Image (cartoon, rainbow, N blue to C red; front, side):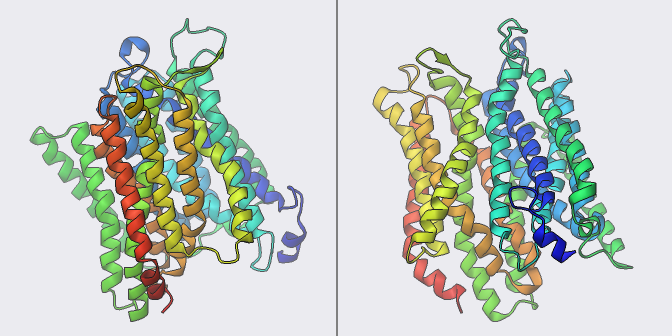
Length: 497
């Protein structure tokens, strides 16, 4: 089997199975980013305009905590794949849940449809996303030199779906350019297109996967042995009971509100990585050198949290800025506020190969801690840049050029292409042997924690407060990035012991 895989070049010189995973993830990202492009507008638009009528603060907080939950659920998805279903089944179940999540939004079920959709898509994405990536790796032997280029092609598929969706889904919600909805947004039509996208992804995954994906993906890597299931079930039941008790008490005391549920999730998203750090630092399974490396990772984790606070604000704060403060035309070309969501994946597709070439030609590539520091400075600068239109024109002078948003997204994506290549790599290299999988989940938990913090701080954003909001967060990121530069040598010395 290994020899056959090494000579399979059916998909742009890569194994044919990569095509299956490429299009599965492309359609999944199409559905997710398409939904996300219009979701915040759906939540805070008035009911008479086809929305749900949430206030802006609540809508922005829900958007942020939604992203946090997606990354929190990926920890569970990885565990279920490793111990119960195997990656191929786990991805399929995830895709089905995602499709039904988009269907729930496409039907006129109001707020209950929204919450049902969030639950389904959070669970589905948690099952699908980490395991598709794992299957890409399983297409190659350890000696196959095409592995890196295969992952690059796979990432291109992710960004392609994410880049097309913010144009296609708003177009559907606006009546496909045919005036079907008489100039009013029909959000359910847009969400329907997202559901169709995930359906296409599932169909080709099932048909192609049976032929071209490796058999090893049908079985869990580390199946539960006799006697191991009961403790897991008991812990799961205890967790559900504790959650039910908390929600019950909140209900009885009149505290079961959307804002308080979001606060509860925020607390969990922040405490979970703290729990993992304490667990690893105090475990007898961790050696002295490994413990030192875990301590060295703490400032990098904190840096990642700050970075994702800014980078993940595109579908929240910058979406609001696009709708409320941006001129939505260039000459005679008119576009929607949701279309700006294409900038993140578009710049990733443009910048990633350029940066890869640049790193290859540098005589001495910056260390991972230096890359984290540089990413923080880029992120901070992108927010500082967003404060300029308010400083120059004032926040009550009306709408400003769309190129402010284009520039801000370009700057923050410089940070993402700086951070992304080294983020998972250094997390893996610093992981204690006894906590390999838990340590790898920490990188995703940094994103979850960042978006959970966002769910609280976006409450302070409005058109009137945009200048202090962008400057405060931007300068904080820049300051921490500069501070981290002073500790680069110390962190490197700790990680190399």
